[in-house]
Length: 281
Length: 275
Image 1 (tube, rainbow over the protein chains, first blue to last red):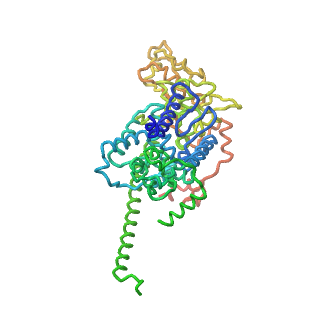
Image 2 (image 1 turned 120 degrees about the vertical axis):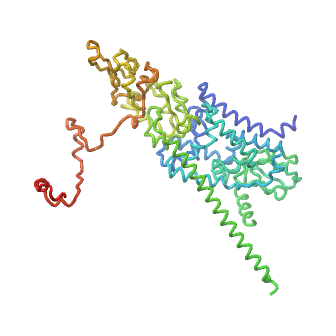
Image 3 (image 1 turned 180 degrees about the vertical axis):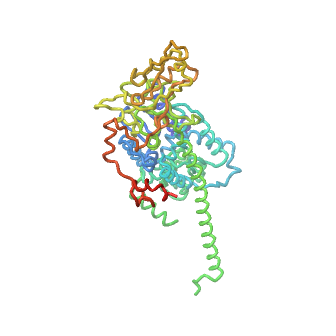
């Protein structure tokens, strides 16, 4: 029992927050709850606190919208939050698409797709290109470009307000991740993930690796949706400093050797280490 | 001398940097190519979905172009609507995705006096000022659209008595009035036909909901779609306020070959110089 708890506690927490948030939003529309109203694009907490998607707000500003203060305050609150806990904590703890892509990744491991599709034909930097492109199109077309195609808000709105053909977006992403590209959507394409990677550059909550405990079993790398951030496994005792880490904590759970765990980043020391590391590369 | 690499090595290094450079340029070109292709499809799609003009927006909505910029698609207005009038566009609805709209024939806007859908808007896409008179919310000045009557299918224009839309109108007697006219066909009956007044109509759609014909013969369209525009050069001379526009009117002068002479000379010249 204890081992099951140790192996799945963060996964359980994550699923609880993901589904719990969806449930609160759903309840607001279906039964008039006032805990969390709206959706991930913009919402109101307890009828007072505005919360808004900073990436959507950025696109809208670039598109030339004159925005009211509520949405700006909301975007600021969310940005501050993810500046501390790590931008991409959104991806693994809040985003509903994570449920879909995690399911695809699990099935991929179970049926062994990776055994015959070893090569990853795409760069993980695509997301930054898509991010740039979204801002460019927002500017040129005068509307928030990603918000019109975002499968994230499509699915999220779908759960709260009814799906329409929104289920198709979910299904396409599932198939894409399962058959075309491992961690394809979340790990390569999604500009919101790219945006939050940039937001979380200096965040405090980090996964820490202690090399002395590591037995090089590489279970962490198998399960990690952003493997490149775990380059230090078995080599160096340092925190995972790449902001592309989603703080999903699956690596911590699968590790049998207590070689990974959450810690608060020591900004000064780690900054130095980061720059040293870059120099060594 | 021994510390220098030999010539072969140098050649190899040069080759390597050259192929690295080529690879880099190729990768960049590939990135730009894919980005351009993606950008083209993406912007074509965005252009397509935002082109629809026949969407009825909640009360207080700013003009459609700005609305599409400003609406963050959070659905707070939809949640605030007590009648489930407002919907959030789903994929397949053929409306700009995620934006709020309503279909009056299904559920019209019941024009709540406290307009719960407007103050909740976090971005200002629904503008509280536009539905406020003297510091108080006033749904009667909302402008969601304009009711339009199809005189061909409206049975009142056939001579059958029906005032369903007139009775349903929440601004009874102002937004829709009934006109009396003699029915020349029978010679002894009257036509009682509805007439919409654009200055009072809010576009709530209660008339469209109430219309008795199979497909509604009175229906709400966004005002920009339903109305024409006279342009600035026609002035209502009998309207003091409209005539005021003359005061700051500017002259546009065109100079051509015949402008050398006065208009009078030009007219008296048998128009020879025109040919």
